[in-house]
Image (cartoon, rainbow, N blue to C red; front, side, top):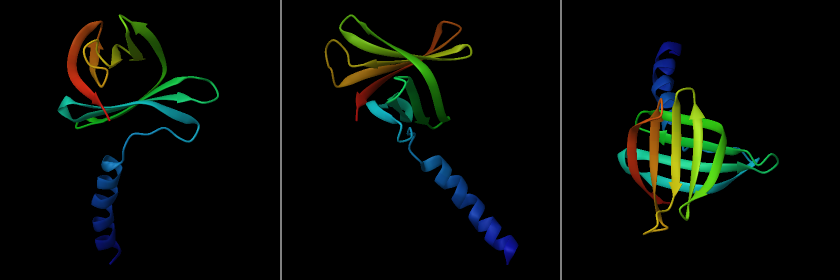
Length: 121
């Protein structure tokens, strides 16, 4: 009985873990939420106390949480940048043509690996 209960619980716990949306805790406020091509969902949060920018993403390749982001207005559009080792993640908040769209860019060693169109959600 215990083995069958364990075999049933394991897939459920794995499914629940992968189906959860990326989110910050109650110490941060959501400032940007996007749905991007390829199944990438990206949320940018700001810590209420420290002002630190937080990156939370879910994708078919897994989930990613990063802190210590930067924000800069470039050519009339805000870009959020986060780093993890040799990777950089850039999230563009809008485009010059459409403020409801954006872009997710991933760089490895300063070379672009991926560029996905996004829309605000």
